[in-house]
Amino acid sequence: MNVTSIYLKNLEAYNGGCRYIVNKGSTRSSKTYSQLQLLYHIACLSRRPRVISIVSESMPHLKKGCIRDFKEILSNDSLWSDRNWNATDKIYKANNSYIEFFSADNPGKVHGPSRDILYINECINIDWEVYRQLAIRTTETVFLDCNPCYEFWLDEKVLVSDGARLVHSTYRDNEYLSAAQIKEIESNRSDKDWWKVYGEGLTGSLQGVVIQNWDIVSQMPEQYKKRWIGIDFGFTNDPTAMVDIRLSDGELWIDELLYEKGYDNPMIANLLSSCGIPRNTPVIADCAEPKSIREIASMGWQVEPAQKGRDSINTGISILNRYRKHVTQRSANIINEYRNYRWMTDAMGNATNTPIDRFNHSVDAQRYVCLNKLMERNNELSYSIVKPATSR
Image 1 (tube, rainbow, N blue to C red):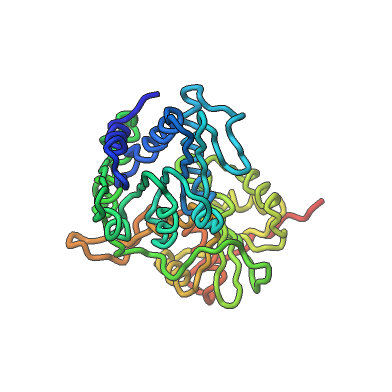
Image 2 (image 1 turned 120 degrees about the vertical axis):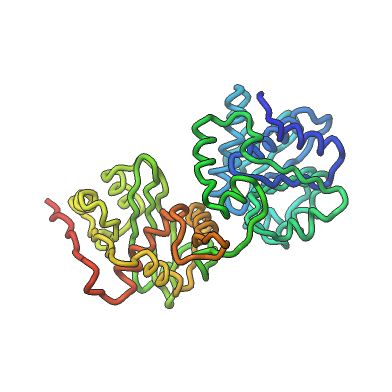
């Protein structure tokens, strides 16, 4: 199993008896991958059975992150065994030890039995009280990692403790990145705020976040006044984002239906069907792709192009921010965009009135709904509906 220098630094801290091992770093620095490798080796080489808990903010976040990476790590060296994996309880048996994966929104787990070792992935998304409940039930070592977007309880309460070790890393510490990946990361140097956190792995600030007034909920409301579907098309380079938006009691409830590359129009139409979306639900899509809109409409969906005009991006954001928004916990990509979509800054570091052109695919899908359905008709904006084809 190939290991990185970050693996070796974590191993050194673990062998040195550190209580808290904190990994702060840039994107693609191998901090998550390296810690998962180390935890697997600890489980296999332990002289006595150990319980190792790997925790993240939600199960969707775990499935797309740590669980997928963990399986990849073992599979690459032909070490993965389906017999050792309890897919229901998300527990993997390694030697006589158990590696369990669970989300921080599971009260029964957070307040449940103790463990030997704890690893909290992206701990910046975890409340202090949740962390405290997990930590006091951990008998040995606590591993934590994050992209340090801003200061939070990790800086104020953990790193100042005796027995805490900081492992700082950047993409340069990952010996296994391809030249194309490095080039892609370094192409963002001009975005100073982004580069500070995701390029250099240094602590940023909360200033300049575009989307305001939102929280995370477990599910969508069954009763609602209005319902719309928003679509932002992508394919090769960008994902197609599709969101379900419901208006209930004057607030917006938002659920992620799709956030994937490689979806063509028939696949999008089939997904609408498989999600149980009623055929009379208005679907608002990016007007830049009229051919896609017409093709999906020909499959029986009520699709209309998003209104666009002068300053439509800021107008859509403004409308979206007027509403209290509730995002389902399974909507990992929406949550990530809300946390990272920011206003650009000028040479003096002051926020401008222009948002960055990233972390905005699902936001764009939401803006389209806002422009068409949550603002008064504007004569300057073109607007037409493509009616679904009559079923035969």
